[in-house]
Structure formats: structure tokens, C-alpha cells
Figure (cartoon, rainbow, N blue to C red):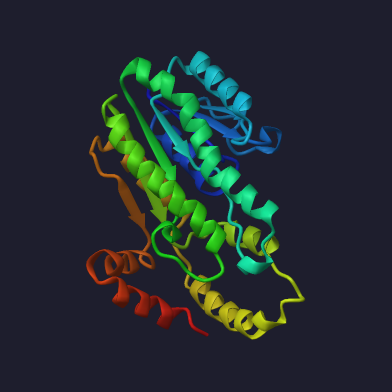
Length: 273
């Protein structure tokens, strides 16, 4: 019997690329998203079942898992990919925006994991793969709330990996650097700002030039990330973290192998206008 993966946030970007990547390698895919009626790319693939799932709605999650198991017989892996980035000056970010960021990126992932665990425990097998971010370990300016949600998800996954090993369930973390998707455009549209906070005006202008330079250099593709996710799902190793992107790997190395002071000096040099 072919293996099956359930993917959240499969409408575009990494989620959609992963659904296609796994299906092309004879996996069954439960591709979930908030608005499946808008999905055209995945719906006619015999290996892919497109279902509605909102990570903020637990009853919605249980229904998608139930339908996925009924359709394919079992689920072998979960890819928690749904999320978004709340960027901007922290002082301009509302409590509602902060709550929403954690509700989706952290609590949403927890909701899906909690719902799938009984199935994995019953089978004494399963792999949980969580897409975090490079800023889950290496922060940059103007993403404090987003980075906080990803740092929290990283800590949750690391701790969870120990207890679920007792059930023969693996936990994996995917850490992408800059990715060529519409993610950055979405974060710009949702950027937290307050025209009354004029003290930040010069700083924001300087940071805009720095980020334009970074993003103009391109980055990994969604297909690159999908390939890494497939490796994590199939390599049968106990590797926890998978780092993607030539822009991110050197910074991770500095954080892992140097002192905290040297790491901060490098980041301040990179991100001071």
C-alpha cells in the first residue's frame, strides 16, 4: 500500500509544491487548505485528495483526518505547513495581530498534531514534519512577532520529539531561508505600521533597502523545500532539523559554532542601516 501524507496550507507555495512532489513519487496526499474550491492545480490528480482544513478549527481538523484515513486507509506522515508572517514594527503591531500570529503558526500546528497523534499511536508509527523558518533560529529586524511564533514552534517540536520517540513517532523540523514564493508579498500587504510613530521613519527606509537587496538575490524554490521535506519523510533517520538555503546556512553555522557575542556582531553588521 502506498504511503500517505497529510499537508496543511497546500493551496500555494511550499504546500502545493510538496503535494505534487510526493504524488509524483507515488505517495497518496491529503492536501488541505481553507478554501479548496479555489484550488485548480491539485484537484484532478488521482494521488491527491483535496479537503478543507482550517488549523484554527479543531473540529475541522478532525474531519479532514477522518476523511483522509477513510479514503486512503491510513496516514503515515503529517506536514504542518500552514502559516503566515506578521511583519512590522512591534510597537505598531496590535494585540489582535499578535494573537492571530500565534493562533496560526503555533497553536494551529499543535491542534493538528494533537488530532493526528491517536492514529499514529495506534499504528506505533508516524512522522510529524513542521515547517518553521530560518528566523526560528536566526532573527532579523521587523519580524519579532513572527520570529517569536517560530522560536516557540521550534522549542515545542524539539521537546515533543523526545516524548514521541517512545511511541516510534518521529518529529522533524524544516528551516527554510529566503524562498521564492508570494510569501513576502503577503507579508508586505500585512505589514504593521503606524504613521504616528515617526521616530522609526528613517530606520524603516534604511531597512527597506537592505531587505530589497536580500530578496533580489533570489532564494530556494518551493520545489527545493519540497525535496527536503520528502527526504525528512523518507530517510528514516533521527535528524531533527533540516536547513535549506545558501543564505541561511552560514548564519546557522555562526550561531552554532561561535559565541553569542560574535553571532550578534555579524547580525548587527548585516542589519544596521
